[in-house]
Image 1: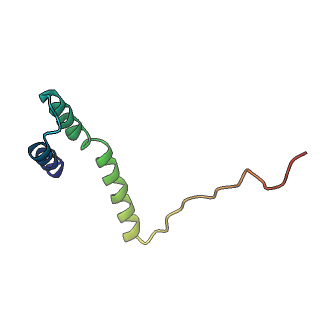
Image 2 (image 1 turned 90 degrees about the horizontal axis):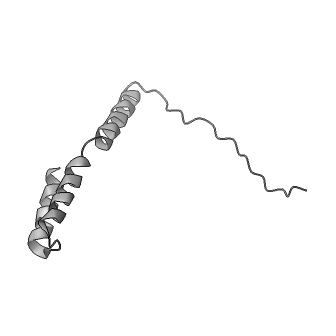
Length: 74
């Protein structure tokens, strides 16, 4: 989150692309909200993968059965 805030501030200092303060507030709100939810879920998936790796458990993707064929149907 610190990197995102820093990049937003640097952009504003050097480029001043946003004319209204409300635009900066929307960007800051989005910056804060992006750090809740998806990042925690991704961290959980990574932790589960690390646990499986430590236990030397093989991952299973399952089997995909093709439904299409190259032959022309009459």
